[in-house]
Image (cartoon, rainbow, N blue to C red; front, top):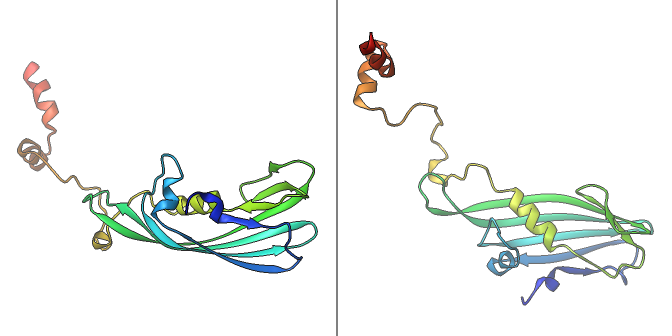
Length: 170
């Protein structure tokens, strides 16, 4: 795969009906995007394109996995991805984006490239807290992990050690 041309769908010659397309992604796919959150992964994207006289509807189903780094242990692990997304293209006089999933394209448009939609959909699946699967059963708690000896003693007494220094000033 030399460039993102592999993710083009030629829409000009398509008849007004439903068409199926299959694309794959791998490590090379993520190298095309600068400052990518993902550098490694593999999977497939199945596209069901429905073309009518006034619009084109793309239903993307992306499945596969990406490699993430655990926030707790810094170990690499494969994170499963499954995304279903609908994108609508309407025909109009000028190209513009009406919303994140609805676009206006020119009537004579030759092709649609879905690489950016695939990348954004995969990137949005990355969780805020990336935990290795071996930590999935751990319960999150707000307890302090490290407590000094002085803090332990003061907690037992019920006096904050920071106030002790102020008491000495009296």
